[in-house]
Structure formats: C-alpha cells, structure tokens
Image (cartoon, rainbow, N blue to C red; front, side):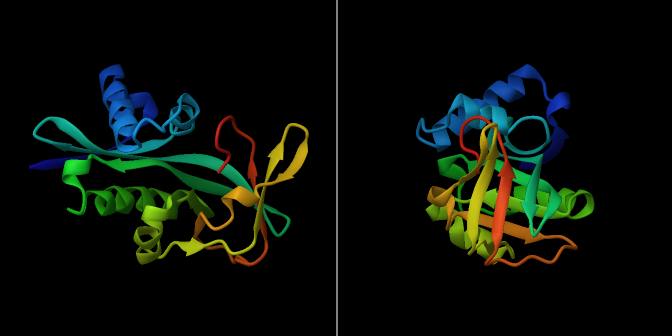
Length: 177
C-alpha cells in the first residue's frame, strides 16, 4: 500500500529530510548537489511511501519569473524522483497531481527545467516547452542562460504567455533553472 504526503518543509522531521536527500542522490546517480537540495527546500513537498519506505519525492517552491515586463509569482517544481524499482507505476503522476493542485490555486505560473528523459512526461500533463530565450537576473545584471533553452517548461495559470518571448528567473546558487 502506498501513502502520499503533501507537506511543507517546515513540517518535515529531520529523518524524513535525510531520507528524501538520499533518495534524490540515488535517483540522480550522485549528480544531485547541495545547491540542488537547497533549491528544493522552503516550499511544499510530495512524498510517496510504500511499506514505510520513501519511494518518491517532488517539491514546489516559490520563485519570481519575469515575462513581458511582468513579475510572475511562480510555483517552481524541483527534485522530482521515484526510486528506480518503483518507476512507471503512476507515482510521479500522483506527486505532480498534488503539486499542480497547489500550483493552480496559489500561483500565476508553474515552471520547471526538465531532463531529456522527462520531456514527454511533462508534455503529457499539459506543461508547455518554452521556445523563446531565457536569462537570469544575477547580482551583476541580466545574463543569458542559453544552456537551459529547450529544457524549460511552463504551466500557465490565469496568465497569457508568449512562448517565443523572453523569460527571466531570479538568482539563486547552483542551477538557476
């Protein structure tokens, strides 16, 4: 039997956070940095448990993205992973259902940066590929993020977007998108 939790970072015990970090380290084959972990904290998490073991994690954190001269309150999806021996059973979809419910009620826009393997998954859920240019507002000014073009996806919630336009994210350590 599986159990799905939707809970804020502040309400997670240290042991659960440790288990989530270990799951993410394993799922990303050691390519999940301390900055990646830090960027996944401070918002809502969905966690999937099976027989008392954590088998899935995803989080939604607040960010500001700028598009067409407007700062948009954005729910940004981070750290989505399902343990390898439990994939393709609907756990990722269940976690995204929970986060998208929060997103649709609390934000102007949803956004995420998808790995190549996840592009079809997000497209099937209605997430739209950002076709335009991307940038980040760094402490020293605006910088293009061409390396992220083609991986950014958005889920408009009551806002009209020009998917061929420019989108800018706020600064943070590690991967900015």
